[in-house]
Image 1 (cartoon, rainbow, N blue to C red):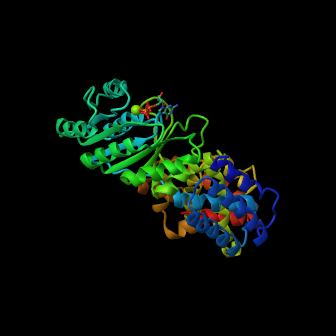
Image 2 (tube, rainbow, N blue to C red):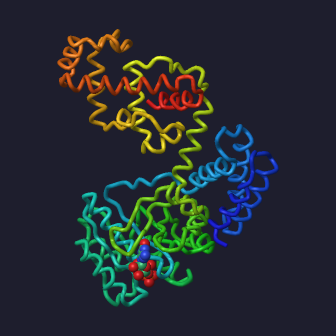
Length: 434
Ligand SMILES: Nc1nc2c(ncn2[C@@H]2O[C@H](COP(=O)(O)OP(=O)(O)OP(=O)(O)O)[C@@H](O)[C@H]2O)c(=O)[nH]1
Ligand SMILES: [Mg+2]
């Protein structure tokens, strides 16, 4: 059973739960611990992870509209992100990168992908083939380097990896980024450990990245610990995420070596490299492709629970609130979802689907109104005022009239729902987002 499977099993335990109490959370945590421990996640870390979840889960009331399962999934996500890191933001500048990993994990391909990544960001790149174990390694990296027009250095038949590094560094000294590909083995034997230590010493890399195939299971933890003992790795790259593996081993690896995930390989092509994104990665790990929207839903509900809807004055819609809300709504993403959330289907869609450009225009038009006009839209019916607002904002009178009619449609909607507590609650949320 890989870690993802174990996590999914633990979360499934909460499927029927309607409340979160200490009994259900302990049961959940027991499963979670089993899954983590059987994946070689370090015991102390398992304890702090599950304790964190238990405390958070029992401390706060379950916000309305969320199932315990979704709520706890959100917490598990947060804890996993603490472990694997938020988004990875590599420094774009001169550096040396050493790639390490077991046989066939994707080191050579990833060397070339990384070379392309930094070239695309304006840096010159040189690749060094330090794989002295596999005879065809030289040609493989040389061919890949040609495909992306990167400089390549290797010494065919040379068995001394440190020597290759030394000569390579002097040959490629004017390259901003230098990436070194190393040999893979089916086990991390003394010979390989010795070799990568020598390479690391000679190369003095800024980044030592362990390349792990996404379908590697819990053994990845032990591998990472061994590489870390040898050269102190600085990050993990998970390859073949386009395949059937979910990357569960990577969790054990980052826990064992206390590093973060950096890049994700998503195909054989050299542009199939992505920066690690926690929502995507954890979603995949947990087998929840739509994790991102679940997290958003939960977080919105938590925020909402902290607002008292009665404090929101939705009685009168003014041009000021109109603008604030359009802006907030345009940030909310797909209208369909939002309409659904409000529980109504007859919103004036045109008024809500505002592009940035239109919003900017509205902003200057409203900016050209007097305070009284902004508060009382009836004043703005007078042609002389419309003409003044158009002139003041550099728009046409037609533009101003269009804006006013959209405002009126919105106002109608407002009147329709102003006594509806639920809608008020949602509106209050939009107001908060400005
Ligand atoms: N689908 C897919 N295939 C990949 C990915 N990364 C690498 N591969 C393939 O995996 C195979 C092994 O990749 P290599 O880059 O040669 O792996 P390596 O770690 O250098 O292998 P050794 O040098 O023999 O240890 C090749 O066929 C690659 O095309 C990936 O992200 N997705
Ligand atoms: Mg290789």
